[in-house]
Length: 178
Image (cartoon, rainbow, N blue to C red; front, side):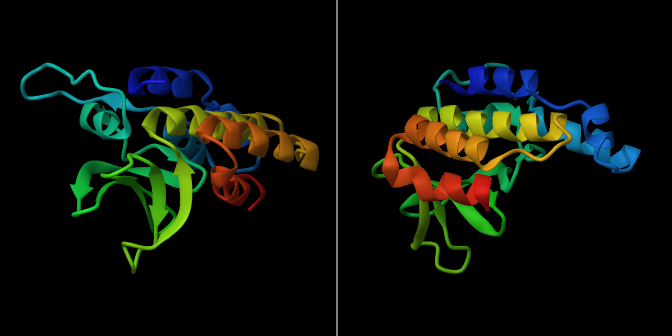
C-alpha cells in the first residue's frame, strides 16, 4: 500500500465525534479524537508531491503530526541519524525506518540503537498492518460494548501477517491486547 491509499483508507474508517460521545467524553475531546484519523495534505513549496510509497513521503506530503492511532503517532518532519530515519513515536519511544533494511522498528527513547519491537518489513507492509490496527480501534470505538478476546486475537493475527510474519507479532500484541 502506498501513502496516498493509506491516508484515504484511514480517513474512511475514522470514527465520528458521535462515536466518541457514546463513551461519555466531552464534545471537545470527541471532535479532536475523531480528527486523529485524518491527515491533511501539505502545501509543498514546489507544488509537486513526491510519488514514492513510504512513511517518509507520508510525512513530507501530509500533516501527520496530528494522526494518533492508539499509541502510534507520527512526527511533523522526518529526523535522521546515521542508521535510522525517525518518523514517529510509540508512546515515548521512537518509530523509525532502518536505513539498511528499510524495516520499520520501535527504538528505545534513551538508547536509540536498541530495537524494542520490529513492526513491519517495510513501509508498505506497515501501512497495511497499522491500517488493520486502526480498523480494530474504529470498531472498538463505534461499538460501545467491549470486544472479546477472539476478536483481539484475530486482529493480532491479521496485523502480524500484513506486517510480514511472526517476527512482528509482539508489537501488535502490545498495541491490541496491551
